[in-house]
Structures are given as structure tokens and as C-alpha cells.
Length: 417
Image (cartoon, rainbow, N blue to C red; front, side):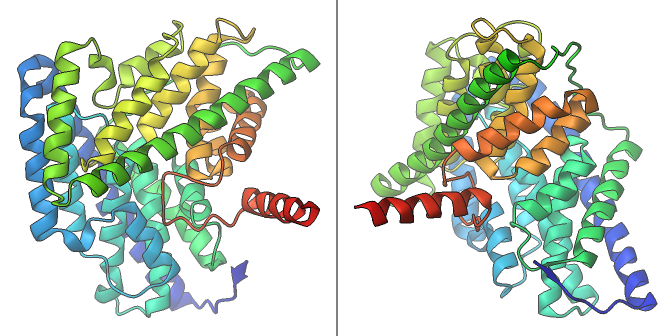
């Protein structure tokens, strides 16, 4: 539901100025992060022994957050909570803390993503303008949306998806037209800022598309259903590991230390190098070469364990990995082009895990082209409906279409008892 808001020329100019500043600062932060991430990844690749420092890196992250970063430890969930009930300014230190923690995670071999880092940096930067421009507390919602939009758009090079994601992940709650417009504007400012710093993004392609037939639609529906189940597995696995570590290890800094030791041993003694870090090369290969049957499950395991024990980073790139490799493996039994299945999985698993089918459809079109739009939209929609009510963000207010369908089914089931 859109809120009504009075708009005058001074207000327009003020918000455009704020928007440009947030876009430039967030985009620059993402550019620095992308360059730094590429550097630490290369260091890890060139020095395989560094994996044994993963427990030490985890201990440093744990101690840093426990003694100095307790006010920002919730990460993305904190942004969602502050949007829903604006109470306390998000500390600016959230940005350097999550940046540091994510780089340490990737340097020593943890399995994590990057969008969570960019979104948290964008959100923390944006929220500071509440004080600088003496904005009312309710206007913080607009700032948080802009921060999420700028961070997401700049880290993936998908401004349209970033703008929609920032709105959809909040289920359009308490959104006004001004916020929607600013979300799109800041996304493009942040995106072009990354381009200004000459930092590139990975490119993917779906070269061939089959003609729509009943058979093709049915196979696409089956694949999309499996993508939704994979999204459900990813979300529940990540939460499960977090609960296990919290239950059995009371001292938080020890969780990533012990988890890091287990990961280091597993990585050293088993052939699982492709499951550490972002895994972008594996994602790229999935579009042309069928992936191994269990690659997507192992990525779920390693990422869920890494984030669940307390390392930092995002979930979205691992979700891309899971979806692309699952789709790639399915190409051996589903008569659809391998690149199409990988691309559908790429965005569909993300859609199911974040409850954002519209943003993920937009991302698919931005990455793979408008021609694949129908396949992408179908995959994202079905995966969203099939992924259950639990997503990767525990504080997300899941009151969308799926929630109402589940509630209607639940009430009908109780009525029939």
C-alpha cells in the first residue's frame, strides 16, 4: 500500500541530492569491495596453505563483533527490522565491520557471497543522512530502501533488479511513490559509480531458446519446482547450522573458530576447492558444461556451515551457484538447453530464498536478455511459491502472495478437521 506524501520543489531537490550522495558513496564502497575481494581470492588461490588460517580468521571475526560490533551483528536482518520499526540509527561502523569480516572469510577459504556486505554498507551509509539532513524518523525508511537498492545494484551491475529488490524484500510495506522513484534513481547512480571506477562484473549468456510448446512448459515447470525446493533447503540449512552452533557453543567468538577448523580440515583432505569463496568460475562453467549431480548440495552445505558458524558475507552468489549448477545437472535429464536451465536456476533459487520473484525476474532479464524473460519469470514465480515460508532473512516480513496462499490452505485444512 502506497503512503501519501506532500512533495514540493525544495523537497525534490533535497532528496535528489541525498540520492546522488548515497549512490556515489555506496557505489564507491562496492567498487572498493569488488577489487579487494578479487585480490584476496587470488591470494588464497596462489597460497593453498592459507586455508589452515581459517580458524584464526574466524576467531578474529568473532572477537571483533562480540567486543566491538554487537550493535551491528544482525547484518541484513537489522536493516529489515529498522525499516519495519525505526528506532535506532544504524551505526556507520556496520560498513567497515562487514567489509573486514567478508574479506577475511574469503581470504582464508570460507564459502560465502557478497551481496550482504554491499547491502549492509549501503544501508549503513544511507542511514547517516538522517542526522546530516535532520530528517524525521519516519523518513529513515526511505533512506534504508535507498541503501539496500544502491548496495545491491552496484555489487551485481543490475540497477533495475536492485531497485525492485529493495522494495520487494520489504513487501512494499509502508512504501510511498517518492521512495519508489528514489530507489530506482539511487540504483542507477550507484551502478554508474562502479562503472566510473572501471570495475567490471561477470557476464552470462543464454544463446539459444526453444520454442514454447506444452512439453517445454511442463519440463520448465518441473525444473522450477526443483529450484524452489533447493531454495528451501538452502534457507533451512543456513538457519539450522546457526541454531546448532548457538546451542552447543555459548561463547560466540568460538563458533567461527571451531567452524573454521572443521572447514579447513574438510577442504584440505577432500577435493572441495570449488566450493570455497564465491565460486564464480563454477557458475560460468555451468552454462556450458553439465555440473556434477551433487555440486549444488555441497555448496548448500559449505555455505550454510560457513555463515551458520559466524563467518561474514552474503548468501546470494552461493544461491546463484546452487541454482546454476542444479540447472546444469538437470540438463542431462530435462530436454532444455543447458544455458537456459542454468540461467533459470541462477535466478529462481535466489527468488525462492529471498521471496523476491519480481526483482529476480528483472535481474534475469538484465543478465540474460529480454528474449529469455518468459522462462525466467516462470522459473522465479514457481520457485517462489514452492520454496516454503522460510527465507534466508529471518526478520523478513513475509506477507506476500505466498503467505496468503499458505494461510488460506492452513485455514481450510483446520476447517476440514
